[in-house]
Image (cartoon, rainbow, N blue to C red; front, side, top):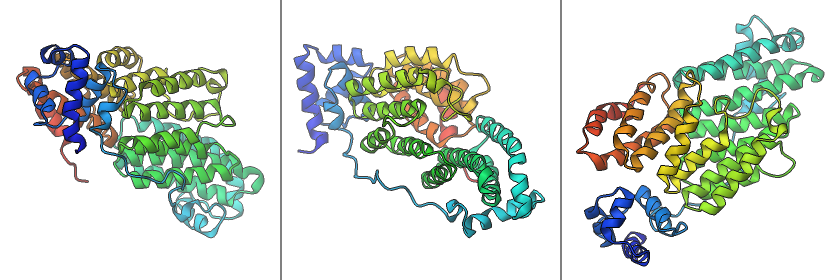
Length: 414
């Protein structure tokens, strides 16, 4: 019997074992009784969102989710994606890649580069901070060409610098490459994101930092997370948690592992990973790490915010909404991309809790930010929100929000 046909009878069995009538169950889940009845009879398929909520309410430990979520295809979690010749540090390909940008700066490869690389470093570091801030309020496709050019420029400077002064330049180039990868993912190009992230790890290793390669695993796990591949997300995140790594990288990896567990309804492993993340990220070593800071700089308590994120995926929207309400209030006003990322998840949690008007109010404010900071990853939650709100078409707040939701999800053409 297919998993779709097995879901309904299993849901009915678990509901009856819990001593709940269909009416009581529908009220608890904020779902239409008639819809649930059809799901139990196998006349309607259950959405992943419904499966999560049923699973959590009936304490089924992921059993119901596994009957809805398609088995993940095996993905390679051991090999690093192929990267461009830009990352062949110290070789002719790297020098060629940097030549154009160096000429633009009025420099030439050779002795002048050797003397210019280190003095220019503070300027490029300041540019990195500025570009990172621009990333909060600028379309990724607008920012990407500038980021790519700056990454090549700094990498070109490193290639021409003497070995004694090359390391800090390589390390800054690696951070440019890592941020370029993130913007590529926000633009919807996962392959480019993985390529730039792999290049960042190679540049960092050449600069004497063996750790950014492990953070690249965390970034790759984000790609698989948004692809719905929980198994690869968990496997990649676990590889970035061995004891030799800095606490911040291990803490961010533990968060990502928690998100993977939440996708499949494994609450116990999810909460254990979140506890581990909280302990690592709160440590003095994590707080006094090297600059620029790895990961988000706008979320004051990443473990708490991730807890709210995971609670929704675990089918506990009310608890998720409480956490996300608190943590979203702490986000700085200028961090538009971060506010949209967690704000739409907050709106989704309120909608799933039946607080439809409040969810629409939150979403309406956030939709106004999207033209300034469009995001392929945030759009995944906007689509989920649109599906959630479609159950409440009789609500005036939902009807009023629909045009703005449709505009946000409409394909764009560059």
